Amino acid sequence: MDDLERQHAIRHELPPPGVTGATLEELSAALVDCRACPRLVQWREQVARERRAAFATEEYWGRPVPGFGDPNARLVVVGLAPAAHGANRTGRMFTGDRSGDWLFRALHRNGFANQPTSRDRRDGLRLVDAWITGAVRCAPPGNRPTPPERDACGAWLDAELRLLNNVVAYVCLGAYAYVSLWRSLGRLGLALPRPRPRFRHGLTVALRSQSISASYHPSQQNTFTGKLTEEMLDDVLQRVRQAIDG
Ligand code: SF4
Image (cartoon, rainbow, N blue to C red; front, side, top):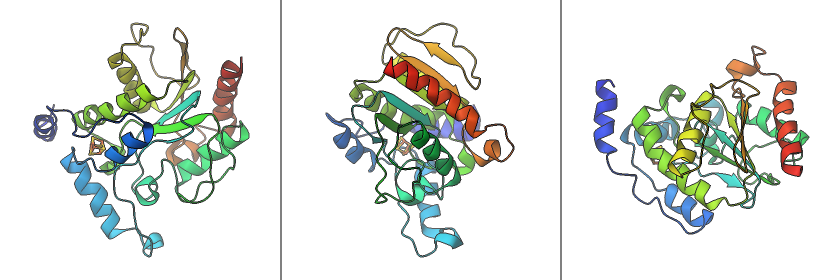
């Protein structure tokens, strides 16, 4: 642990305030006021003030980004964290950036979204039997939360997963999401195989009544280089579709 991490660890000895909620709506309402991670609060708000030239006339969200979708979802998709000029701008997970363009096209092709595009919070997008969330809810500099930030925000993920009662399948986008989900399910008391299987694209781990699948994250780093193709992501989602439809 370096000095920065130690400094943040001290602040994170207590769970973030406001991790409560009898419903997903109440949880989201509490989440958007969270200021538990000083470095991330500073960054998300700085990005929202300075803005990218292409979005200079837009009002950025600049706050924690809640999960969204169908509260009765059987599929939960877990990402890393809001993108600085994507979800941190629009206020909805994976909305307004290239990763989201890629993800929502795939969800639509596989029947988990009513439309293939995701532009802003009022664009008519509706997830079908799916919920999208993230390991960390505030945009981190360089897309790299510190371990204490991940652990602090894990309390929100735990609370959210507790309220999603119909989940049959988790799809983790990237190794960070995979490890974070694993830790969260462990804290919630699920019996998980040990040792944890190593992350790889296409991995599926069967639990007692659920499964965890893994895909490379649809970041431009992966999609522009061909590390992740549309066929590869479809393959993961099609297998999930078969599993939840029986
Ligand atoms: Fe709160 Fe999570 Fe944002 Fe940290 S990253 S301030 S725990 S919402």
